[in-house]
Image (cartoon, rainbow, N blue to C red; front, side, top):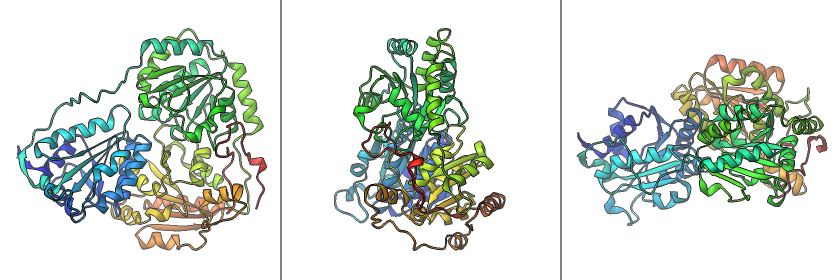
Length: 566
C-alpha cells in the first residue's frame, strides 16, 4: 500500500495492538495528527502538558503490562517529555514515544523548534531513532516496540522529521524483527541455577529479596510458590509491593531507608540473599559495607549490567526471572519443606513484634497513615493505587494492603513529583473496571494539576487524595532531623482552594478535617464517578518512620517510638 509517513505511523500503532495514545500536537507532528483524525483504530487522549502525556502512557503500561504510547512535537514539546522518559527509564517501563522533528533540511540549522531529541534522550531511553529515510519507518516502528517490551523493558524514542511524515511510499509492516546487536539473554544458565539451588538447601537463614523485575516478568505467582515450598521469609522493594500479598505470613514488608524494622534486620542477619529482579538501589542497601555482610548473594536479573554493579555476587544468573524461577522450583521440589527455616522465621517474628510497622493515631487530627489504611479497608485489592513522590509515597508503600502486582504505581527510581495524577489517568484508561486512587501531597499535585481538564473532558474518574500538611513534607522532615529545623523554602501554607480548583475544571472537590468527613467524601467521590480532589488536612509535622539516615547501615534505624509529637 502507498501512503504517507504519517499514516504509516498510525498503521504501525494499530498493527501493534495499541488501543490508547496520549499526546499533544504541534507543528512538526501535525501530519501525524491529521492521520489520527482520519483513523478509528485507536483513541487519542489530549493531555494538557507533554510531561503528563508521557506519565499517562507510563501509568497505562505499569497497570496493564502493555507498551504505553505517547506522542509529542519537536523543540519544547520534546523537552517537556524528557522527564517522563527518564521516569520510565529508571523503572524499566515499556514505552514508545513518537516525537515530531523539523524537516531533514533544517536539522543542524537552529531551525524553529529544533532540538537534538536523539542526543538529549540518549541517557534516558533504552534506544532511540532519528528516521532519515521513509523506507526505514515501518522497520523502525516494529523494532521500537520489540525493544521496548523485550529483555529489560524501557522507553524507546522514534524522532520523525516533518518531511518524512509527508512523503509518500510503500508500506509493508514487518512480521518479525532481526537486530543482530540486540539479543537479550532470557534463559538462565542451568549450571548456575543448580548452584543457587544447592546454596538455598545449605543455608540456614535465606531471604527472598524481591524487586520490580518480578512484576515486569509476571513472576509473582512463582515467587509465592518458592516462598511457600520452603517457608522462606521475604522482603519487597518499593517497586515490588504487592508481589507476596500483604497478609502473607512470610512477608516482612518493605526493605530500605523507610523499610520495616524486621525487613532491615532480616537483610542484616541473613546468610543467603536470593535477589530476584532487584538492582541493589542505594535506598535499599544503605551503607554498602554493612549491607548483608554475612550473606552469600544469588542475583537473578535479565540485565547483566546490574549483576555485581554494587554488591559482590556469589551466584550470578542472567535471565528472565520467570524462567529462572521455574527451574529453581523444579530443582527444589522434594528437597525442601516449609518447616526447614522455622527458627529463622521465629527470630524475624520477634523483631516484628518488637518494632511493628505502626503509628500513633489521633482523634484530633487525621493521621496520613490512617487515611491510607482506611482506603485499604474500603477498597483493598479492587483499587489501583498511584502516588506522587514524598512522604505520602512512603506512607502509602508502608500502610496500604497491596495484594497483587501492578496494583501499586509510583516513580521509584527518578522520584518524579507530578507523576501520580497523569499516571492515574493512564492506569484508569487501561483498567477501567478498577477504582484508581492517587495519593499525593500539596506540593506534588500542583505540578500537573492541569490534567483536571483532561480527566473531565474524557470522563476519567480518578480520585486524588491530597494528604495536605502545608509543607514539602519529605524535605521538611530532613530539615527537622539534619538541619536544626531550618525550614528553608518548604512551607507551603499559601495554597489554592483545592475544592474550588477541582470544581472549576469540571470535577468535584472536598475539604476534609475529620475521619467521618473522609469516609463520606470517599464514598461520594466513588458514587459520582468523576475526577475528584479530596483535600485532607493532616498533622503538619508527621514523619515517615522507620528511617535509615542517608549512608547509614540498615540496622541503625530511627524508629517511631523515638518521634516526639508536635
